[in-house]
Image (tube, rainbow, N blue to C red; front, side, top):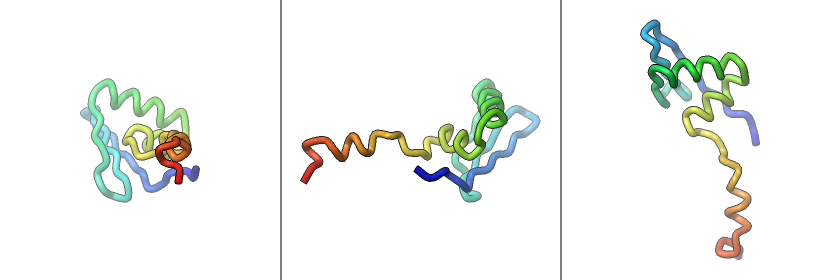
Length: 73
């Protein structure tokens, strides 16, 4: 799996975090979710953290689904 890229975030003084992906709005976080996000993004890889928070990442079940008897050809 390649690392995601193209994510950016801006945090406002009011406690709101706006996450964008290739300059398009992806999500907005407020309150405790915003503070938890800011803690995680400073502790880990920012691109991976933003991908996880926006839901834009592989979930790891693609191989399992393709190997299911219903999906085999």
